Image 1 (spheres, rainbow, N blue to C red):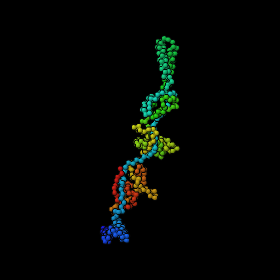
Image 2 (spheres, rainbow, N blue to C red):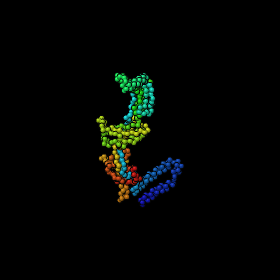
Image 3 (cartoon, rainbow, N blue to C red):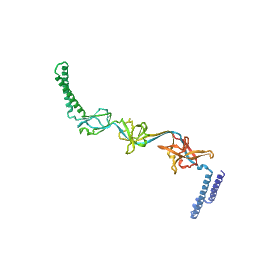
Image 4 (tube, helix red, strand yellow):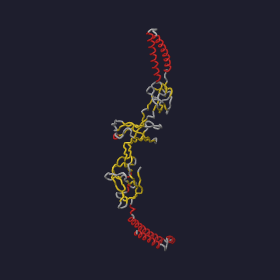
Length: 395
């Protein structure tokens, strides 16, 4: 403290001295003389004063630095490490699929007469979607049904007579044969006529109409509709074989659809047991709820699979980790030195586990309750005095 007073008095004395020297003639007075020689002399004198003052200020700073130890303390924030649940997620890309996604073709060749649905229509199983020109089959069927009814009447009359022991067996058998043949023929034509209609094989949505009314289509060759069931979709993806033991049915999954700005929680539905020899992966299916029908088949998604969980993990931000020339990773913790009455930075070599987001799992090197330097970790050294501005707990 006495040293500070001495330096301060010396500084004030210098100011007083220079002030007294200049009382005889101020800068304004010198300028008013319009004398170039006096102006240059005055400027040189002030320059000398400025240099002397700068040297005095530097001397004062050096003296203050020696006496005030707080000037050497690094300002840091600290993080209290506590056990918490840590989940690691494996990220793979997947595509939306559905087991009910088909293109419908006609079973009958002819002119597409009527389209009964449009794109986006919801249909039930068996619903009539389109009708083709039947080339007179409907009229033929009506005639056959009349003939069948007549054959049935004849057969029933002969059967009644036969049961009463009236008439010959030959007449009875001929009537029966005629009726059965007529039934078979009517059924064949009815089945053929049914092929002139395109119906929905399952509940779903008309995703596309691929032909126009009036066009001629060929059986099994000309696509007419695409029908999908958006309520029974799933994600399919390939996972590297190294994760076969970690990725199992029921594992938690987060699905991200970037183009929809949508995130969906789900789980692994099934895991394939075949390893693709070309890319060393196995396939998985992920259940996909689609209540709002926003998700469409073949849409790409980012699949985050929970492949590892630690219920008592110690986590630190990635930003606090450093690495030495030997490849060892380390962090700085805070320790209070009772003898010096100061907090010090202490280097700790650590072994890290998995990384998720901005945080790293620490397996060895620190203990629950340790305080790790967060902000300022890059500017401290082992054993350096520090000033902790704030201590926080990661949640």
